[in-house]
Amino acid sequence: PVAPRGTTWWVNNQVPAGRAARTRVRVGTSKVAAPRSLPELKVSGVKLGDDAGVPVARGKVENLSSIEQKRLTIFAVALKGRRVVAAGRAVVEKVRPKGSQRQRFSVYFTGDPTGARLEISAPPSTLGGA
Image (cartoon, rainbow, N blue to C red; front, side, top):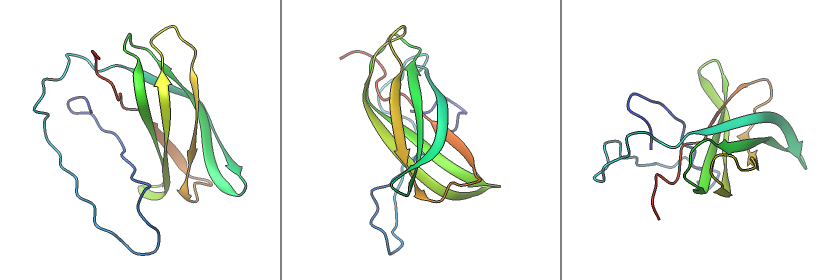
C-alpha cells in the first residue's frame, strides 16, 4: 500500500536474466477499505558493502506502529541522477510492534550501486487484524 499522493519503489528481482521481459502492473484503489493511517516503519543504519563480490545494503528496520508486520519487503534502488543503476529487495519474516527490537536486513543488488544514491522503502505488509 502507498499513502494517498505518496510514492514508493517496487522491485521485482525474480525476473530471469538475459532477455528483457514485460511486466504488468495494476495501479488503482483497493476494493477493501484502507485504514485511516498506514503502519509506519523506519529504516536506519544502511551501509553498502559486498558479500562474496555481490553488492549488498545492510541495515535495520523498526516498526513504529502497534501492528506486527509479517513478511515485510524492503526495496532498495540505486540512482545516478534519475537513472536506476541497481536494485534489490529483502524480506523480513516478522517485525514486532513499537517498542520491540529493530530487525536486521540485507538487500542483494542486481547491478552496481557503487557511487549511487540509495533510496530504501519499507511499505507496510500488514495493515491490521489477523
